[in-house]
Image (tube, helix red, strand yellow):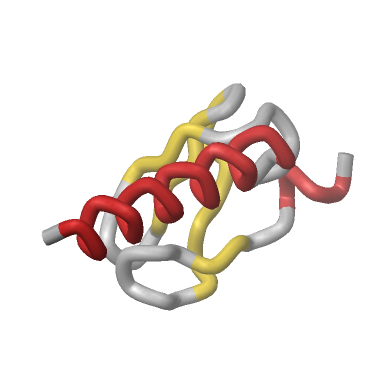
Length: 65
């Protein structure tokens, strides 16, 4: 349960200021960006896999243009 009290790095501003504010809801204290993540950790393995898949598709689309 220690993971939910840990501060995480914000993807938007780069500061280590993202805190859990509710179940699966995370918010950066610096820039107020809100993220949906895991219940106890900001990132989940499934979310990481989805992000890689989306980035791969974007690269393919950009290569075709």
